[in-house]
Image 1 (cartoon, rainbow, N blue to C red):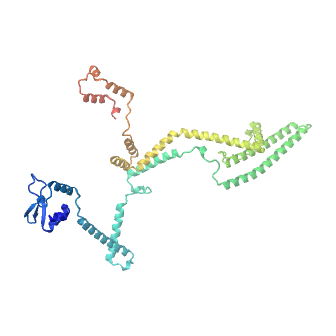
Image 2 (cartoon, rainbow, N blue to C red):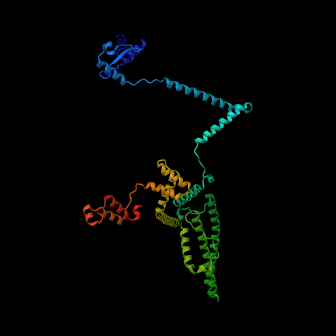
Image 3 (cartoon, helix red, strand yellow):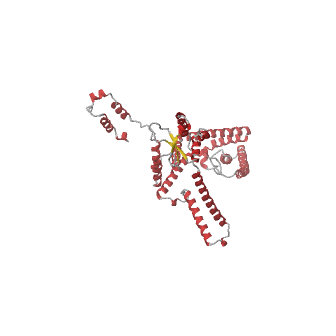
Length: 437
């Protein structure tokens, strides 16, 4: 009774107080009728009495105390864990000390090291190199394809060709999208234009003087009507005058083409000056001179020259934009196919870990065998595994006829006595081979 009052109605404390007197409490032997009855006995097994009778505790209250004790979490003995952790910490400290001693040997001059220390350093270096090599993945460089297998080299070659072909389609540009004019720097082009303008001005001046002389001579011959050979001389003077005008127009043509080409407004390089003008061009010389005369008048007038250049540039730019847009519109399907090809090749190059393991292994084996197209088809087959299978019209009609009511099929079908499973197999056998595929 003193132990129970001292324990404060705590069974654990009560057991500890009993243990101080070499007593103990345990469940009674008669568990058939009173399963919760506990007895107190000595360490030698001498029975003292029942717990409830000695402590005057009701059975119901004792059962409640037992339930509370069983519901409490059992205390964990951490001494083995602490002992094991202490041993691990000791081993770790010893390992750190050995490693520190080895690292300290690195800074010691080699001449002062013993043979045993040199051997220890050498073995430690080999172990560290082996550990690092084991952690690193086996990566090969594409610069040295000879380290790969023959099949994988074939796969790499085909993959590069497919990727280059697709990227060449995407990166293709219309010829009009390229920059006109030479590829030389701007200062060199400016110098060429200035030099050409100086030379062209001197040649224009000489051609203008030749035209003026020819016109003056023609006028003088027109005034000399008394000469006997007036017709022959007039024809020669007119010929010289036309030749001078043709040379003037040829120089103007060269200057205009040179400026437009070097300013990036035309893709046609200037043709060299042909002086004298070839004879075969004299057939259309009158129209040629008229056009050049009108062009000369336009170029000499500042306002008309600006409008002419603006109109020419605007018209050329609109025509160029229309041709480029039409060219790109015609290449849309080809570019889309090239994008899909690049996406498939990039996916094949880096296989995602989200793929099933059997698919990744199958694709890896095909890549090692050099089967690029088969590897791509394997990925496509996995992507299209859930795609619905579309039936042909004949197949759909066959399936519709097969789904008639049972009563109608019994009247029309001679195989109505077959089981549903047999009829299904027979219908599948009647379908074309492509349906099974």
